[in-house]
Length: 221
Image (tube, rainbow, N blue to C red; front, side, top):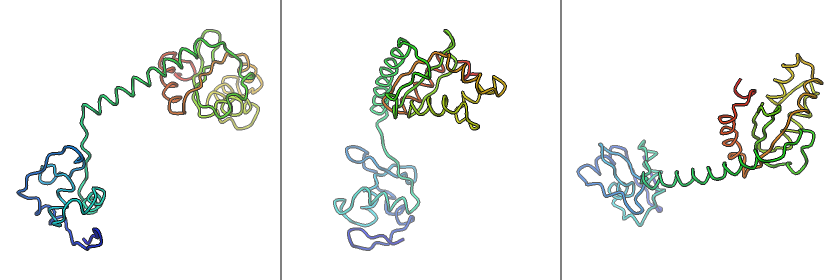
């Protein structure tokens, strides 16, 4: 297969690559050497491989160029990651998320409930989670990227329409035997608590956590 590297043409084959590295010790994967291919059971840094097969000094081509060539030749290019560093980073991000979720849950559960008809424009375009309660019993937990649209249009406004885009709305209509007015009156009497989140991804995670903790009737049925 023909490749152009810094204006020069090289004919490189998969077999040629394997032959070029055979008998050569792989350089250690350290420092900037994080991309590698496995050839005959050994891990070779990709720039070492291309340097061996072309005779070029490594300063004459980039790791991106080496990845492109080896990928086209059918080699899988791997990324070396220090598993300890990776684990520490993941746990750090997880702990930060837990702190956020705890704050959202505290604010949601200690907030004064409102009714769905009282949802105002301050929620327009805001991501978050909402919980509907009947007395002290949680009925439904939902998340959305736009609280105002989901609650006022998709749920509340659409109860009187032929098509019901909200899962809870559909279940309420079914519960009242298709009587949309009764479903609307019932929904109007439910207590509603809302938590605005940083983004819709956080909202989705918070939704899952609250469903697990609260076990609302219309989510787990």
